[in-house]
Structure formats: C-alpha cells, structure tokens
Length: 290
Image 1 (tube, rainbow, N blue to C red):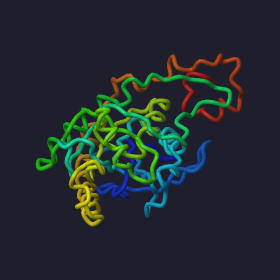
Image 2: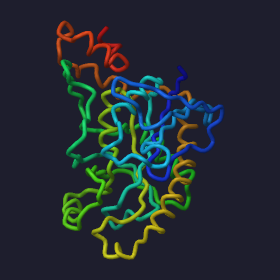
Image 3: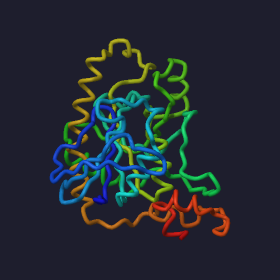
Image 4: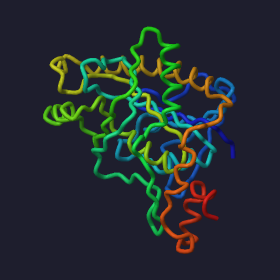
C-alpha cells in the first residue's frame, strides 16, 4: 500500500489537488466502510500527500452522508500524521468577509445524527478535546497564508460551529449563534477533528468564507452565482496556501501532543478487550494494545 505523511481533505469547490505529481489513485476499504472517494496520492513540495474529496467527486454526498470514520481511518492506514482540512463556511461576524480565510481554534457541535468516535462495541476511550485544533499545524497554515496570499485577509482563532444541515440556518438560529460568540458556520469539520484526535493525527481547519450567514442585512443580495464565484476563487487560494504549508512541513517531525492522544485515554482493561475490537481498531490502538 502506498503511504503519505500529510492528508488533505477538500471541501465544497476543492475536488482535486493541483500540483501533485506521480499520482496514484488508491481505493481503500476500512472496518468502517468505504471512504468518500478514492484517494489521490502524489508528491507536492517534496512530500507525499493523500488528497480526498470530502463530498466525493461531483459533490454527491450530503454532510450527513459523509463516512467520516472511514475517511479518517483510511488516512491512518496510509500513514498520515497531519490533516489539512479545507472547508467552505458562512461568516457570523461582520469582520470575516467573503473570500477571507479563517483558521479557527475551537469547535461547537450542533449536529444530531452522526457518530463521532471510533470507540464503542466493547472498547471505551475518552480523549481530551479542550483544544481541538493542532496549534503547530495551524501556525504553519497561518504563516503560509500570510506569505502566499497578499491580497487575502487571514484570520487566526475563533469558533467553527458545526450544524447538521443540509438546510442552512434560520435567521433565529443565526442570531443565536452570533450571540454565543461563534465565528463561522459549516457542516463537516467537527466530526473530522474528533476522529483525527482519536487517531492521533494532527488536524487543522482552513475555513474559506463564501458568504455571510442569513443574519446579515445584505444576505438577500447574495446570488448563487456569487457564491460559486467565491468557491472557485477560494479553491485557487487554498491550493496555493496548502502547497506552501506542505513545503514548510516536509520532513518536519511533530513536537505537539497529538501523536500521544490515546496514551491515557483507553479506559477498558486490556484483558477485557475482545479480539474483534482489537482487529477493528488495529491501525489506531495497535501501538498500545496488541
């Protein structure tokens, strides 16, 4: 099986990764089913990279249909240590404008029908998640954004509220989220962040603002054509930023806590863990439980 140290998950508008060379299309099967699509594994800035379109090519999957566990488990199978997640979002703050890029450091969960853990079925674990974003990875992304995208406003920090979808917010919901101090709103990244932490993979979100959420007085003047234009422009900016960040990460060892997230998290006594559970989670728990 081919391997890659860096994973990129592309969201709305980012269905392929420009600049990859020596590309292999790899189809994987996991204990949690099939990932969203085949992985595209190639070389970028001297590093092997695994790219996955979150919604599948052609944008076929709703947020609730995305096989989050299969996607992250497959990344682990490939040897991925860091995941850069690109995600289209709506802005909940006046200062976060369409075409801006935000690197949030917090998440708030408003989903209802999604599984956000690999554990269960006879194996209990509780990760710490107070700081859900890898600060080292976010630092690298922020620095790359400021260096590469001179005309784009880069924002560091804030909270990404993850809603269920697929419908967008009501005005009442949007105003409540603003009153809570939320920064941007999307439908996908919370589950990825939790699962990446359980898999001991560094994770950071690059939130690409396409519009103000429906709270904004100019909301009705936003057309679908404008949003598509922003999506396409954001995708171009994201590719430049990601390539620069990967160049900075090439060959760089991790010094964060992400790679030890499970060290004290597994609660079930090893003697009580079934062979089925051990096999199902081998890629994740193998270094702790044989």
